[in-house]
Length: 169
Image (cartoon, rainbow, N blue to C red):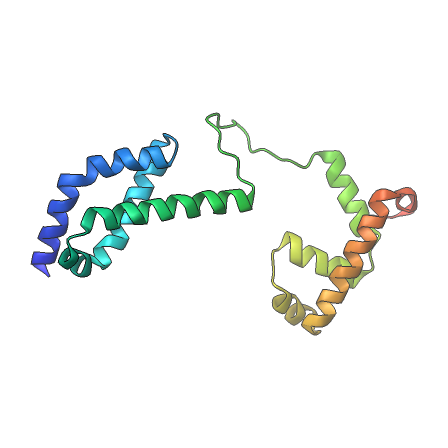
Protein backbone atom coordinates (compact mmCIF):
# COMPACT_ATOMS: atom_id res chain seq x y z
CA UNK A 1 0.00 0.00 0.00
CA UNK A 2 2.89 2.37 0.72
CA UNK A 3 4.17 2.02 -2.85
CA UNK A 4 0.69 2.91 -4.18
CA UNK A 5 0.56 6.00 -1.97
CA UNK A 6 4.08 7.07 -2.94
CA UNK A 7 3.29 6.79 -6.65
CA UNK A 8 0.02 8.64 -6.24
CA UNK A 9 1.58 11.44 -4.18
CA UNK A 10 4.36 11.81 -6.73
CA UNK A 11 1.79 12.09 -9.53
CA UNK A 12 -0.24 14.68 -7.61
CA UNK A 13 2.88 16.71 -6.83
CA UNK A 14 4.03 16.64 -10.45
CA UNK A 15 0.71 17.22 -12.23
CA UNK A 16 -1.66 19.04 -9.86
CA UNK A 17 -0.86 22.51 -11.25
CA UNK A 18 -1.55 21.40 -14.82
CA UNK A 19 -4.72 19.61 -13.74
CA UNK A 20 -5.89 22.73 -11.93
CA UNK A 21 -5.31 24.84 -15.07
CA UNK A 22 -7.43 22.40 -17.08
CA UNK A 23 -10.10 22.38 -14.41
CA UNK A 24 -10.28 26.19 -14.39
CA UNK A 25 -10.96 26.12 -18.11
CA UNK A 26 -13.61 23.43 -17.65
CA UNK A 27 -15.32 25.54 -14.99
CA UNK A 28 -15.14 28.81 -16.91
CA UNK A 29 -12.56 30.27 -14.55
CA UNK A 30 -14.30 29.44 -11.26
CA UNK A 31 -11.34 28.73 -8.99
CA UNK A 32 -13.36 27.06 -6.23
CA UNK A 33 -15.25 24.82 -8.63
CA UNK A 34 -11.96 23.95 -10.35
CA UNK A 35 -10.39 22.94 -7.05
CA UNK A 36 -13.44 20.80 -6.25
CA UNK A 37 -13.23 19.23 -9.70
CA UNK A 38 -9.56 18.31 -9.29
CA UNK A 39 -10.22 16.96 -5.81
CA UNK A 40 -13.10 14.80 -7.03
CA UNK A 41 -11.03 13.48 -9.93
CA UNK A 42 -8.08 12.67 -7.70
CA UNK A 43 -10.32 10.87 -5.21
CA UNK A 44 -11.70 8.67 -7.98
CA UNK A 45 -8.26 8.12 -9.46
CA UNK A 46 -6.83 7.06 -6.10
CA UNK A 47 -9.37 4.25 -5.86
CA UNK A 48 -8.41 2.96 -9.32
CA UNK A 49 -4.72 3.86 -9.05
CA UNK A 50 -3.19 0.35 -9.33
CA UNK A 51 -5.20 -0.36 -12.49
CA UNK A 52 -4.51 2.95 -14.23
CA UNK A 53 -0.87 2.92 -13.16
CA UNK A 54 -0.36 -0.43 -14.92
CA UNK A 55 -1.79 1.02 -18.11
CA UNK A 56 0.38 4.12 -17.87
CA UNK A 57 -2.68 6.31 -18.40
CA UNK A 58 -2.70 8.26 -15.16
CA UNK A 59 -3.08 11.77 -16.50
CA UNK A 60 -5.54 10.93 -19.27
CA UNK A 61 -7.66 9.02 -16.76
CA UNK A 62 -7.76 11.96 -14.35
CA UNK A 63 -8.51 14.44 -17.15
CA UNK A 64 -11.30 12.18 -18.38
CA UNK A 65 -12.82 12.09 -14.90
CA UNK A 66 -12.57 15.88 -14.64
CA UNK A 67 -14.27 16.36 -18.00
CA UNK A 68 -17.15 14.01 -17.21
CA UNK A 69 -17.58 15.54 -13.76
CA UNK A 70 -17.66 19.08 -15.18
CA UNK A 71 -20.33 18.07 -17.70
CA UNK A 72 -22.38 16.31 -15.02
CA UNK A 73 -22.08 19.31 -12.74
CA UNK A 74 -23.37 21.62 -15.49
CA UNK A 75 -26.28 19.31 -16.21
CA UNK A 76 -27.23 19.09 -12.55
CA UNK A 77 -27.04 22.84 -12.11
CA UNK A 78 -29.22 23.33 -15.19
CA UNK A 79 -31.79 20.82 -13.96
CA UNK A 80 -32.01 22.45 -10.55
CA UNK A 81 -32.32 25.89 -12.11
CA UNK A 82 -29.19 27.24 -10.46
CA UNK A 83 -27.85 30.49 -11.77
CA UNK A 84 -24.14 31.16 -11.35
CA UNK A 85 -23.33 34.74 -10.36
CA UNK A 86 -20.33 36.68 -9.14
CA UNK A 87 -22.49 38.83 -6.85
CA UNK A 88 -23.61 37.19 -3.64
CA UNK A 89 -26.69 38.88 -2.20
CA UNK A 90 -26.49 40.20 1.36
CA UNK A 91 -29.85 38.67 2.16
CA UNK A 92 -31.40 35.41 1.02
CA UNK A 93 -33.31 35.80 -2.19
CA UNK A 94 -36.99 34.98 -1.77
CA UNK A 95 -38.51 34.51 -5.22
CA UNK A 96 -41.97 34.47 -3.67
CA UNK A 97 -43.09 37.86 -2.48
CA UNK A 98 -45.67 38.47 0.24
CA UNK A 99 -48.50 38.81 -2.27
CA UNK A 100 -47.52 35.47 -3.84
CA UNK A 101 -47.39 33.84 -0.40
CA UNK A 102 -50.86 35.17 0.40
CA UNK A 103 -52.14 33.83 -2.91
CA UNK A 104 -50.65 30.37 -2.25
CA UNK A 105 -52.16 30.35 1.25
CA UNK A 106 -55.53 31.27 -0.20
CA UNK A 107 -55.23 28.50 -2.79
CA UNK A 108 -54.32 26.00 -0.09
CA UNK A 109 -57.23 27.24 2.02
CA UNK A 110 -59.61 26.49 -0.84
CA UNK A 111 -58.62 22.81 -0.85
CA UNK A 112 -60.24 20.04 1.19
CA UNK A 113 -58.13 19.12 4.25
CA UNK A 114 -56.62 15.88 2.85
CA UNK A 115 -55.68 17.51 -0.45
CA UNK A 116 -54.16 20.42 1.48
CA UNK A 117 -52.23 17.97 3.66
CA UNK A 118 -50.89 16.14 0.61
CA UNK A 119 -49.77 19.40 -1.01
CA UNK A 120 -48.05 20.67 2.13
CA UNK A 121 -46.34 17.36 2.87
CA UNK A 122 -45.23 16.95 -0.74
CA UNK A 123 -44.14 20.44 -1.70
CA UNK A 124 -43.32 22.09 1.61
CA UNK A 125 -41.97 19.15 3.63
CA UNK A 126 -40.63 17.39 0.50
CA UNK A 127 -41.92 13.95 1.50
CA UNK A 128 -42.25 11.12 -1.00
CA UNK A 129 -45.62 9.67 -1.95
CA UNK A 130 -44.90 6.62 0.21
CA UNK A 131 -44.03 8.78 3.23
CA UNK A 132 -47.19 10.85 2.76
CA UNK A 133 -49.29 7.70 2.42
CA UNK A 134 -47.84 6.40 5.66
CA UNK A 135 -48.42 9.72 7.44
CA UNK A 136 -52.03 9.95 6.24
CA UNK A 137 -52.81 6.24 6.61
CA UNK A 138 -53.78 5.72 2.98
CA UNK A 139 -52.31 4.20 -0.18
CA UNK A 140 -49.78 5.86 -2.47
CA UNK A 141 -52.43 5.83 -5.19
CA UNK A 142 -54.74 7.87 -2.98
CA UNK A 143 -51.93 10.35 -2.39
CA UNK A 144 -51.41 10.67 -6.15
CA UNK A 145 -55.14 11.21 -6.69
CA UNK A 146 -55.32 13.89 -3.98
CA UNK A 147 -52.26 15.65 -5.42
CA UNK A 148 -53.65 15.56 -8.94
CA UNK A 149 -57.02 16.95 -7.88
CA UNK A 150 -55.40 19.60 -5.69
CA UNK A 151 -53.12 20.79 -8.49
CA UNK A 152 -56.07 20.95 -10.90
CA UNK A 153 -58.08 22.99 -8.40
CA UNK A 154 -55.18 25.33 -7.69
CA UNK A 155 -54.56 25.86 -11.41
CA UNK A 156 -58.21 26.58 -12.04
CA UNK A 157 -58.37 29.03 -9.13
CA UNK A 158 -55.18 30.75 -10.25
CA UNK A 159 -56.81 31.53 -13.58
CA UNK A 160 -60.16 32.56 -12.04
CA UNK A 161 -59.48 33.78 -8.48
CA UNK A 162 -63.08 34.95 -7.83
CA UNK A 163 -63.95 31.90 -5.67
CA UNK A 164 -60.97 32.71 -3.41
CA UNK A 165 -62.49 35.93 -2.07
CA UNK A 166 -64.56 34.11 0.57
CA UNK A 167 -61.95 31.57 1.63
CA UNK A 168 -60.86 31.69 5.27
CA UNK A 169 -57.20 31.03 6.04
